[in-house]
Length: 64
Length: 310
Length: 258
Image (cartoon, rainbow over all chains, first blue to last red; front, side, top):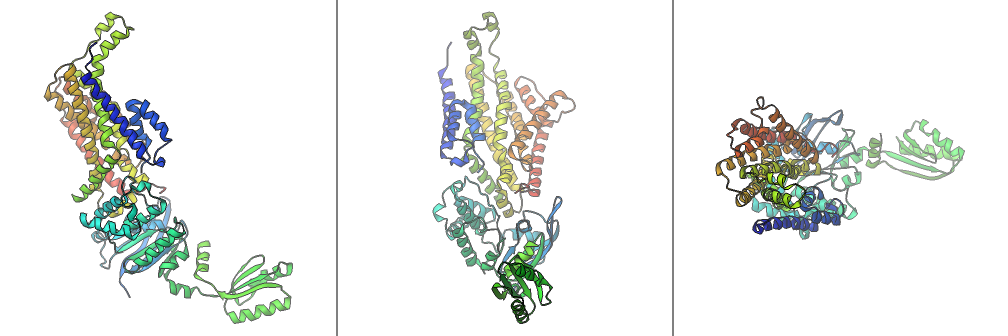
């Protein structure tokens, strides 16, 4: 099977951007702004792939 | 007599089956400081929210300025009111300075002026150090001070403050009271509180609300004089005879009002001299072993406690 | 106009500070790009796994480019729409439940510019995210599978944006009476209901904006559907939603217990 790595790399890079953004947001937030412990979200973001980061962005932060 | 900046007539608010405000009327004069006093649940917050334009009255009217017009005139007035809710909530992702600039612009200040004025009020409330920090990192006291800053940022002619000192520690309370004292005369102040002492400290007028109605209002000095009544306080040793005698006190013709406890009595009397002479004689004749007799006068505090407790 | 800009800038800054401008477009781009890649390599993967007899695997072929793009749209209809609605659910509901409305509303004489600004900010994010994801999908499809025609592709994209837009706009009026998650849930539920009804009773619901996603797919796969009525009604829906949100927020600016 021939794999076109030129097209696969951007996908991996994009996933990395998503996860890094989520982690940056998590580190910068005050502890009380985050629902649940921070380390739990680190695991969800790193292991949960796209959906892990999406879950953090939607449900991880308390409004203001 | 000074001109009124706000006239409220028969203001009423229904909310479902409740009527938190039941037809209140009062005026505010330009530059005056008025305390809206009353226990929790008296309708103070609802009244202030109507004045700030957040709730619309069910009945009655609110007139700003002395023009007598309503409608469009009121809209213009909205910009000249500063409002601090009891629990002010900000956008945590903004810095204190950004929030004030945003508020000032909403109230119609042009960009440059909005920034200058924001820096000015930040300094006034002592938040200049924290100006560029995110509000989510502010302490409770800092948020309260930011709340006051936003109420002042557009240079309003009148400020409405809902329990501005209730949530603060003694130092924070002192700072806010001093700030209000400095603002007196420049802006018309109406602030609500459930503590009479706060009202007496900075205000010259008060409106006492109980259960949605105005129980009393007027100049503090006049009210003090009005509610100054001769008062006798008695304290006796524990004993059967003493207790019986205390209980018989309300029958005396010279006693207007009596509050009898087990070993003490608080008596409002018509004529202090007559009452004093009669009671001392009675006590000597009956052999009442008193501990303390004190002649004094009832205060505003007594009136407040009575009206609120009733 | 100036009031609109003050609110619009605030909404944009809020979206930037909460990283919405990064993560929502990133999710759409990923969804869009992964679809053609998955579909292209699927036959190979099945063949290699060996669980399927080679004769059956030979029947699984890579679909034509138009169908790949249509399947990307159906990805956007589930995860994409969910992400958009959930990320927008607190635009109005949050102002009420956090209590920030109590400080903002007394300052403004009209709520409409604020509501239009909120809508415009939502639409900016929606259009950027969709265009990136859709363009990414089209690029990957053309690289891996075959060329696409511009006309149907652009038409389908425009109808699809209209479909996403009217659903996302529902969170404005719903958020003025409910809390954020409830508003999101009802917006998604009513969108699903309208879309399903439109496919069950096509003759009765010619005008339904719920048809727009099906129309977009039809555009791609060679049909020439008449789409003016649903497109116009989607625009009306959005205008009505925004006005309703304005009136509702003015009536009940605070949560009952606050």
